Image 1 (cartoon, rainbow, N blue to C red):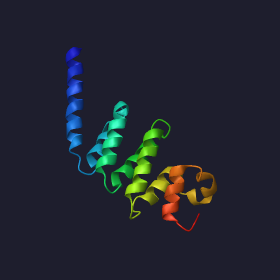
Image 2: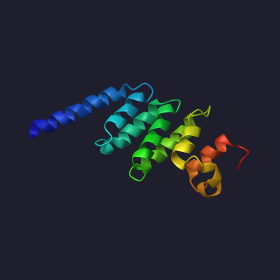
Image 3: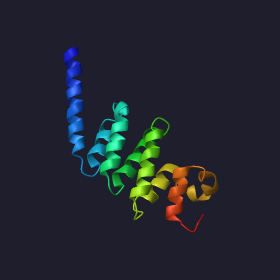
Image 4: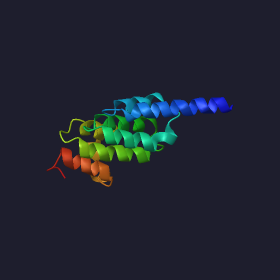
Length: 133
């Protein structure tokens, strides 16, 4: 039993070392996707790492949509952090349209008034439609 625990810890440390070399967030995104059933306890580290290395918001946006699709309640804290990060990073608005649709639905435009209570929604909507609020 002790040997098994050591092997698991070694794998975890080797994964963290590999993720420390992540240049753009892709490695971290792939790690989350490939280990979604066992990485919840590491999500603080994984999300912080992705936010740090993803300069454009591409993988941060993808991770937010992915976690939302998997379990929006369980990952709510992380989804919110990822969305806040993509709002800051996506200056060219390449990923914000996908986030607003992926999180709040294709019909979000019909529910703007009620969705504006969500700070991340309001911030994205304001960026995408500066004169529409």
